[in-house]
Length: 104
Ligand SMILES: [Zn+2]
Image (tube, rainbow, N blue to C red; front, top):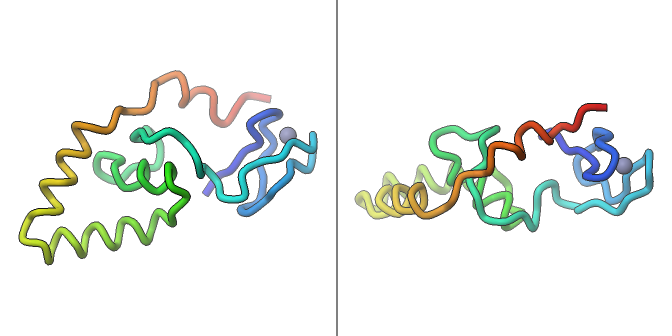
């Protein structure tokens, strides 16, 4: 997963806690603590899973696998919840896409 310093835009390795270029403290989990919204980049269907994963610091692959399994074994309940989340979770603003990664 691409992970950039929010201050200078330097690409950072996963799990980095400090930017190696400017020394800014960054989140240990990439994207953790973001507002709950559906990202425009990296989504598979509607971006619900990646939105939830980024807002809570969860592993995106784990969230997707559990969502698919739950949808299959819940008799459609989770599928309905997914559709509700699709409608209810706001989409990421368009300007955020052009800001990441920032041009150097
Ligand atoms: Zn930096």
